Length: 469
Figure (cartoon, rainbow, N blue to C red):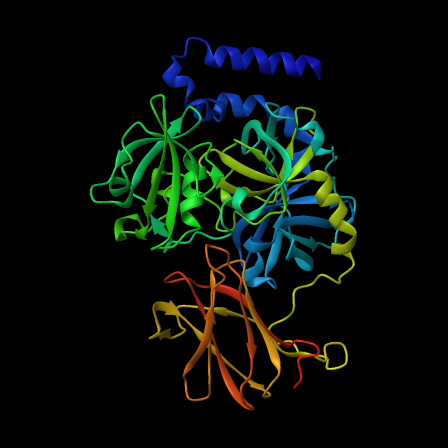
């Protein structure tokens, strides 16, 4: 293995020899050149045998990682959620087998976006795990596929760490977020402003070209992605505080965000040619590396130069950011995933009144373009659900989704709006706590914060214990 290390080191030096400083800025293109990718073939040789392509209704959506020889495979949940009954896996040798969903871990504080699927086959090659503590900053890593070469290579940019919501992108892009109006590039100590849109909030606040924004909304900015994510959590009308270096001078500027212009409704990074994962945030713990893993290549193993799996790629989060769930976190989840107790509920599952005496409704369904748009939220699709509530009792109404940014509206039987909630700032779950003023039927409108969003969601209505009159 030492000879392999030396060979890789020599080849990388040759690849970068003679490059100008400007060219070195584009090292991500160099390291993913065919020659460099081919060089890492021996690193992923064994692991690729334990990597499968996951298909939903015949379409390739993710990779899967074989974790046990008798057919247990881990993959990315949000990519198979849409049609869980039509999952197949394709092996390196071309063999295709049907797979069934066994368990999902993507709730609350454990929103890993991981699913365990099972194929009826024994004697499969499995990955060899290694604790992510060995994946230190600067270490080379390769993302295995089910071919002879890795799908991407790179280095660890941030070692495994637990995350708070503000330290990573929102789960889902909020195309109706606030707009600041700056062009950005990497800068020393933050995000460098390379353009300021006329009449934009940034211009009105006094932001100038060549300013370095090093803090936004109370959070450190380490590059363009950090600032994009900070603004993406805020709405039109919100005020954002920017801390700026202008030459040697430190400034604090305040800008009031406005609605995003139509030409900027797309993801700022995707308009620069980088396709990002639809679900790319909300993870409790991640390794961050700079490999260019495509969204449809998530779910596969991330290996070190020994070919040991240090994590499972879970999201392409930015132009130079890919996230992986650390190996030890995945291993710890496997027993509960295998138990069968973590299956997501079936659509309109019948509620057991003995086990769930306070639960009135639980439905797993979806919003599609066939659903009607509603007048109170123009451009958004919606579904209405009816539930009977009792006067004086308090109820929790929750809409959760890995596909869309949830928005709830509660109406009385005549259609009068009583309350609403979207949980704000790019976080996809909506929750209403409501004390019923009278006995009767109430209408719950399940819709979205963003326009034209579609996807699966779960709606739950439960009575708060001890809330009786």
